[in-house]
Length: 207
Image 1 (tube, rainbow, N blue to C red):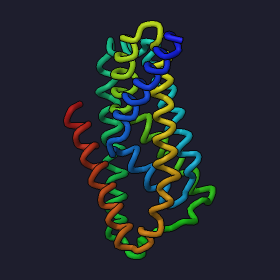
Image 2 (image 1 turned 180 degrees about the vertical axis):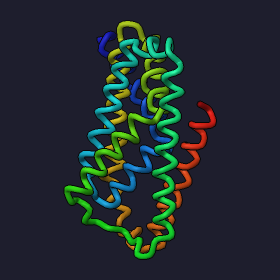
Image 3 (image 1 turned 45 degrees about the vertical axis):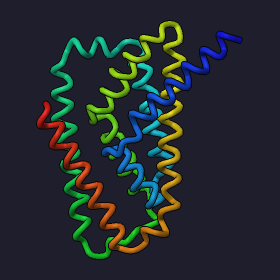
Image 4 (image 1 turned 90 degrees about the vertical axis):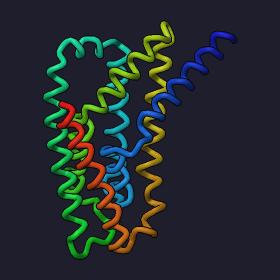
């Protein structure tokens, strides 16, 4: 009984730690929110984000983070590539702010749109150095302190990722009625643009 309680406590700690790292609005969260509001490939985007986090958390708990640290140049390359990608996506979002007819669309499930959403989500996830820092390095380090229960901690963190992205992606539909006007959509795109451009600059500056 005591062992079960300890395991549940460890899983809860992993859940809380994982949630605290991903809740802050960043490029990935802003993208998931936008896709959720547009109802565009939401299941695919949520699945990619959650599964990617689960894989990276697994690598972190397994100790791969220590191996990557031995080649710090890898992070520099990823920072430049990810920073340029975020600047490009931010520029596109800024362009939509000034584009006429930018009202919210709720029928964006065409094959081409879904393909673009999936590719963008993959790039937004795997080209973002912060994802590696949070999941592989930070969570991996914290999990290591849990000893034999490190995998239980990692499971809790992975579950937090699934809950958060599902809530963000599917819950965003509740906002669609309030964002049906072009001005509201432009404000959202403005926030997305500012967030991604700021992150892109910070990544390149810190590379």
